[in-house]
Every structure is written in structure tokens, then in C-alpha cells.
Image 1 (cartoon, one colour):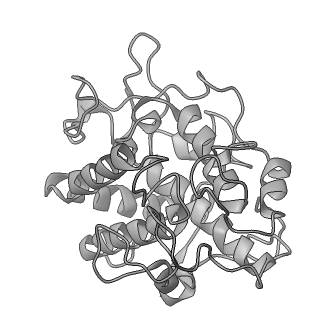
Image 2 (cartoon, rainbow, N blue to C red):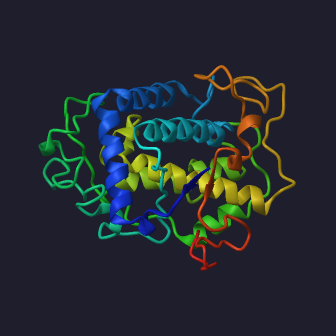
Length: 290
């Protein structure tokens, strides 16, 4: 059973193994296939038409399946690798450990956003952006340039306190936990993090930046915690809704999974520490999670 750890707790060896697995997926073309899938869905998901991966109730189970498949791809390279998560309520600045040169590298240079250090810098020759939103082939970031502050713990706690998963009209105008976490209403935690990182993370091709996976692992962890906090609050809608994925509907692009199949993440992986009502995030019970 995979155990997903806080990136701040990774050892140097664990960081190297994760980076090496990411680079191998990039070399063999599988990484870019994940980027293409995400970009395709974010471009086709609309408030008035069919929507699966974004702006809809299935945002959370869709990304859970997406991360599971990516984690399995990493493990096909190195069975010891699991996806870490980035707790952006704690690691809130460009000086945080995940942006170090021995891990993800830092922000981009001022004139064009190009990331110049770390294993994913274009200059290494190992990380060319092939699924592009423009002509630039290098990884770009602008940490904190477009939005000053990452979501706070208090803001996230307010979202976690919401008792209803989702509600009509089941899109970016909806009230409820899913849409407030996704970020189209309220304090917009998920969307705000994408914009805070900037560069490719602020586009449909956001998985071009490896931090995408760490960000979404934390979003997934928050969903797991919400489920523990509200055990009587089901996934909605249950059935009979147009343009969105009901509880037992199949989620594209897969033909073998529905939201119901993904409600229990512990069938696939666990998170370090507890993800329950006490907010504990460490094996020692230290209260550090959002």
C-alpha cells in the first residue's frame, strides 16, 4: 500500500528517486500523455456542456483517478516511489524546501519566467515542454507574482466545514464543498495555488510542471479529510443529472470507473499520519495539516 508523505518530510534519497522516475516518464513519452489528457479535458469542460474533470462534481474523483494512474506509472519505474503532497498552508513561500535546486527548482527569471535551476530546468536537456500553450519549450514559473498569498489554514478550515458536497447547477456557480475547494467560489484554494505558481501551472497544460502532482495530492488529501469530518454527506448528484457525472456514471476517459469506485482512497493508498477531524498530519500526532 502506497503511503503519500508530506514533501517537507522526504529524505534526500526519496527526492532523488522521485525526480529520477519523473525524468524517466518524460523520456519515454508517458509524462506528456498525462499532460495531453489534462489539457484536453480542461479545454472541453464547460459550465453549460458536458463536464467531467473540472467545474463539476467529478472534479475530485476524476483527479483522484488521474493521480492514481500517474503514481502507478512512477512505480513502474521505481516501486518505492509514491506521490508526496505539498501542504501550501504551511510551505507558503518561494524559499520553501520543495523549490530547492535539489528538488523542483525555484521560480522563473523575471524577463520570461524560465526556470533556471533544478532538474526540470530546460538547460539540463531533460525537460522540454512538448504540450504547449505557446511557442516556448521551457518550464515557466512566477511564484507569487499574480496572487500574493497562498490559501491559509483558516481559509481551508472554512471550506472543510461545509457540509454539502455539491449542488445545482453543478458547475462553477455551485455552492458546496467541491466548488469552494476547486476554487470558483469563496476563497478559491485549488485555483489560487495554480495561479500563485504561475507559468504552465496557470494553464490547461499545468501538469507540465511537476508541482501539479504535489498540489493535487494535497487537494485529494483535503477531500479525504472532509469525508472523515462529514461521514453522512454523500457524493452528489446521485443520479439523473444531465451533463455531469452522477455517482455511478462512468468517468471519461476511462471505461471502468465511476465516482462511487473512488470514494475510499484507502483502497489504493494512504496518507501519512491522520487525515481526520483532529487535523493531525504526522505520525507523532503533531497538528500541522490544513
